[in-house]
Image (cartoon, rainbow, N blue to C red; front, side, top):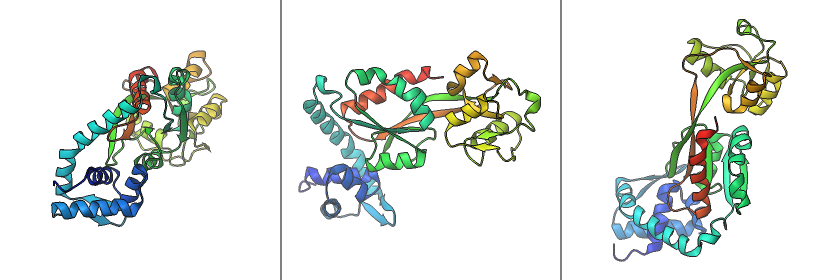
Length: 290
């Protein structure tokens, strides 16, 4: 491989991790034909194919897996060293961090957790949405970090468990446990994903009722239930204040409450110190969100 330049290896590793030439070109700031030419040149140098071209991206061959394992750590170390050279300790937050996550979690837990870093100079741009689209934006380079309610399965992402969210069946004091079979259901989505999971886990039964209210933001669900509209299942971090002051109460106390693990994801490889700082801060403090 003596004839292959560092640019070829860099383009290869970015395509390998991003899953497509277009996503890699965006991350590298290069034209797609340039990245394609780099891959072809490296394949010619190695005398073997590195990717199989498919309709929606590139699938690595065993040779690509082997090459990525060999060169990935060295290129990552080199890039990280360059970043630290360019961004001294006083410039940790010289990069705007683009973070994505679910609206209610970002607004009630993530942003308050990061307030201290903002006062130190952190610049944040927030995108709210569902996991699939946010993780696609992360893979393509549009986001730097994603807090996800689902475990990310995309290739090229570094994923850590962030914390567990616990769920509770709640209602205003006017409703009791005896009402659960006929009380209006207030839901996040038409197919009742959170409620159905609770019914299956706790009551070992399938919930087939139609919700009375559907609002695609758990803060709206919380507002409706607190006003007495019906019953729902919410993460306890979101309704802790209402439970504490009596505006809501738990209708049931299972021995093992249902939980869901939250994850934080970034792209593989070196990251700007600002991204590393945000990720590390959230991993350190998320345990106190419950």
